[in-house]
Length: 71
Image 1 (cartoon, helix red, strand yellow):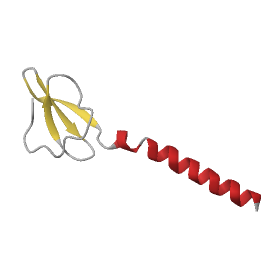
Image 2 (cartoon, rainbow, N blue to C red):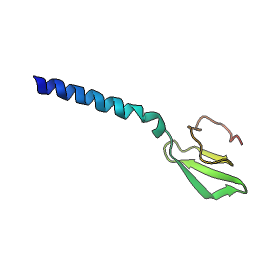
Image 3 (cartoon, rainbow, N blue to C red):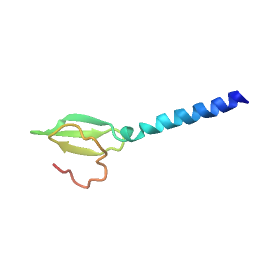
């Protein structure tokens, strides 16, 4: 019986730790230098397929909802 309780507690702890980092795994941005335009660098998201041009570094959130790129 104590082993079953310990197993349930371990599963709950693993689930909490795994869920805590979920928002940071939403989008994974990759720089696409071939698609860059001057000072604007093109970034592609591997997860959702979004494309965006930025001049100030990698996007820090999901940009899939944008209909047109914002500079």
